[in-house]
Image (cartoon, rainbow, N blue to C red):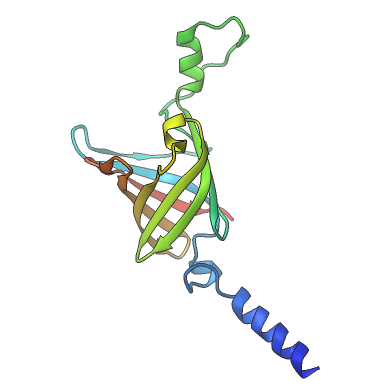
Amino acid sequence: MKELFLVLFSVTLLGSVAIAGQSKHESLQGAWQTVEIAMTGPGARTIAIPEPRANLIVFTARHYSQLHLDAEGPRPALADATTASADQLRAVWGPFAGDAGSYEVHDGVITMRPVVARSPSAMAPGAFTTYAYRLDGNTLWVTFQKNQDGPIVNPVTIKAVRVE
């Protein structure tokens, strides 16, 4: 009986620690939506993402999946994808992006390593992206830092809110 209590206590204690010693509420685990994008460099600006937000990122204990539209307006609908022109296909599918893979968190930095992605170069061996991040309750800010090609020249900061 004592052994069972000790095992259950240990499992409960370990289960209450999510990522890098953080509580679940303080961890990245969950579903998030981007609500704002702040761009730097030439043409710097901040874009508020209105409802309904066409993006979602999900973090589990060690993996992530993200899908998003990189368009400020609605995409046209295709009547028939088999007869659409290249320009029509680009207008519909070009703004759509997504990837999924593993991630690590260490000293305020998230490193993502895609396993599958819309872009084949994002799936290349050794591909990664790092982000500085700050988490305040149910709000997350991530700023692009570097990828396998080097530092990001004009880093973008994304503000996301937890939706689950």
